[in-house]
Every structure is written in C-alpha cells, then in structure tokens.
Length: 186
Ligand SMILES: Cc1cc2nc3c(=O)[nH]c(=O)nc-3n(C[C@H](O)[C@H](O)[C@H](O)COP(=O)(O)O)c2cc1C
Image (cartoon, rainbow, N blue to C red; front, side, top):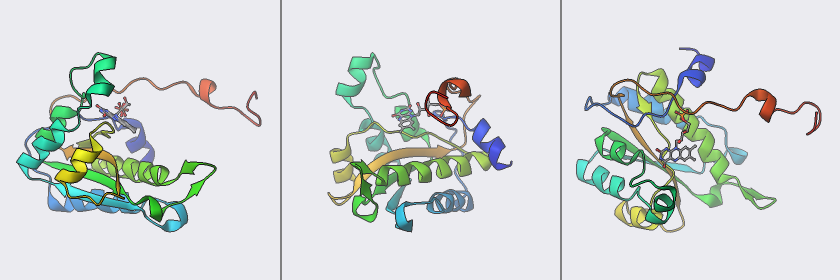
C-alpha cells in the first residue's frame, strides 16, 4: 500500500477481533510513530504499551468523562469498548518540556498529533486498525499507569485486527471550503 492510498483508506477502527498483534507489527507501528517530525527533533513522546487485560479494562472505564459525554447525549465514549477488546492499547504521553511553546501554542500537541497519525497509518498499512481516543480521565489514568505528574497523556490507541467491516468515517469538507489560494479570500 503506498502512502497516499494508506492516508485515503485509513478509518478509525472501534471493533477488534481477539487475534493477537504480531510483535514485529507492533514494533513497526511504534517505529513509525518515533519517525515523526518534532519541534527541534526533541521527540517529546513516550509510549506505554499495555496488554494486561485488567489494566485495559480499567483504561476503558477511564475513557468515559461524564461532563463531556453527558452533554452530548452519549452514554459512553464510542471507542470505550475497543480499549478493553483490542489486544494492545498504546498510551501516548508527552513531556511538554521536550517541545516548544511559541505565540501561546504548545507544540508538544502538534508533535504528538503527527506521531499519532504515523502510528495509525502504520497500523493500517499492516492490516491492523486503531483510533485516536482523546477523551479520558487523565489524572486517574496517570495514577493507574504511574505516569509522572509533569508528563501529559495525549491519546489512547487501541490496536488490533479490525472485526467486521470498518465503517467509513465522516465525509471530509471539500477542498474549496478549506483551501484558499494566495490570500485568505483567494
Ligand atoms: C484528537 C482526536 C481525539 C479523538 N477522540 C476520540 C474519542 O475519544 N472517541 C472516539 O470514538 N473517537 C475519537 N476520535 C476519532 C474521530 O472521531 C475520527 O477520527 C473522525 O470521526 C474521523 O473518522 P475517521 O478517523 O474514521 O476518518 C478522535 C480523533 C482525534 C484526532
């Protein structure tokens, strides 16, 4: 699968079969994440690979944030079950002191976003699936995984073989709506 094809066909996967992830595929996914560009090549990211079933179930519980979902009419995070069912969960963390801050923008989130897409594309290119889970109880999760308090948790990534048909993600805005040429109004 070439890069453009991988980008175009990747979709969020929220249902996983019990088939284990081969260690070499997991390694390739982590290496792809580590190849991402980052602020001054500081590579603020850290990844915790979780396979213990009881811990995955606790992570799943902690991906529900009532104040966030209740107001949106959800009874759970759409990816919540996936965090317990996938054979692997990658917890993506960042050390903000290993990235830059400029104009009030904290670039550790940018660094991690790029690494996250690399991770998901590498999964997809190998027949695996994943989804970026960005809603979770950070403090409780940090305690569970013994993450130092100055390290931020940016995303959770269930990883495994998709179960059943992967439904298409939402349609994308047409380029004419999001691209300007030469100037904003162009
Ligand atoms: C920063 C970020 C946070 C996300 N958090 C969640 C989440 O908590 N739960 C979930 O089910 N999907 C989550 N998603 C997945 C998006 O809903 C999904 O990428 C989007 O609907 C487009 O679908 P696609 O990935 O299949 O193309 C998140 C995506 C991003 C980039």
